Image (cartoon, rainbow, N blue to C red; front, top):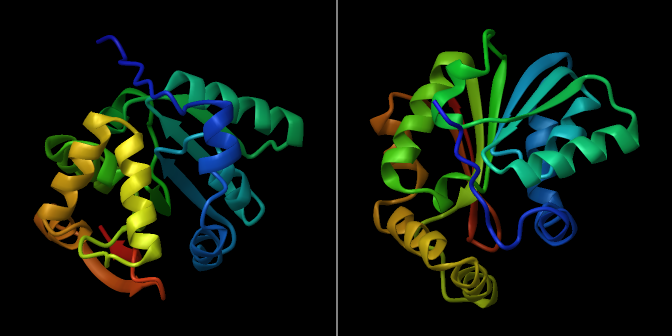
Length: 206
């Protein structure tokens, strides 16, 4: 089966400089939540910023992304920083069995689920369940307010492209992450809304 290379106009250096650095406080919450010495699967790793942060306290981190240019940038960052316990693979998270032959202590999904269509969301979450004991998810809350940050996020999603924006709207109309996790059999153990009421950090067991 041929691997699809999903491309966006913002992939590569632009993503690394402007997207992969956003909301460091929320991402740091995930890093702090992960226990020392664990193995981590970073699903939709982008240009590898979170994977590299997690490597400082993890035994091994595997980052996967369906964009070849994102993975290329992640590998360059890894080489530049001389990190040995991180690996990056160009792979479809909806078919992890094609590249993974081991389980992980936890999986991380950051800003991934809202940008893909509903069947892909279900497929990826079901795949993640096969390979990890726990999942940490950072994504938008479906009922984000029309405050500064709520409007700003809507604009970002709009300019990401029509397909991306339509998936974002569909994600919100379906109630965001909680219904998805319930549908795919996860047990939510923590669900925290940030003070801007735009993002949620959810922890769930598989």
